Image (cartoon, rainbow, N blue to C red; front, side, top):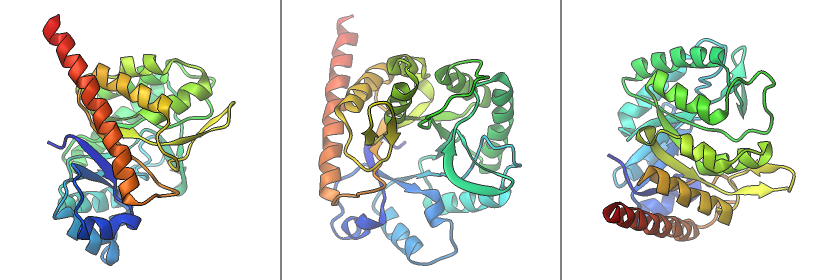
Length: 279
């Protein structure tokens, strides 16, 4: 069981992890970066995997697409999982392409009963093929569908129950979407089924006032730290990590930021435990 605090494995830090072996509970890899027959990425992956537990995070499953499931992709994903032996496999609750064309973006879904039915069947088939539950992540959104029949958090909660899948809660994405659409981020967190949230993502964003953009190129902002504390208070200890995909700093800076995440979570959990004992 993977627990504690991790980082996303990025090429900038390969040498650090091999030579220095910094203290870290686990690493998350982007699945598609290693779904190849050979070469340097797999060489480094195998060396680093010898020292750190890993989880796999994908960006191309396109679980919400109307295209048929891509079983060539799923076979490669399963082969990588056999190699890495990850704690879990995750992807995004979105669609990324149509007519077999990958648009390389995480595109929003309509929150309707029809979409729930469509997604449930696809998730069940993917999980049967992989032989394991998958985690699905809430994405940042900037537009809403006029035909939505429920809130995003109601949709996610219901989907996780119907498809018997698990969840990757991206707290930064909750904050970004809440700002863009004007809903209460705490209400989103309150709706998450604690028993199904296996992982939390934290990241930075750009605030343009009337629009907030999920960029993964800044340190975690104070308001996201505060929402993370609320999530941990509500959900209990959940494996948590920092995503940084651009303007990647030296590893020591990320480790220092992760230490702040760890200390904040420990303080919240200590208060939570004390309150439970006192009740």
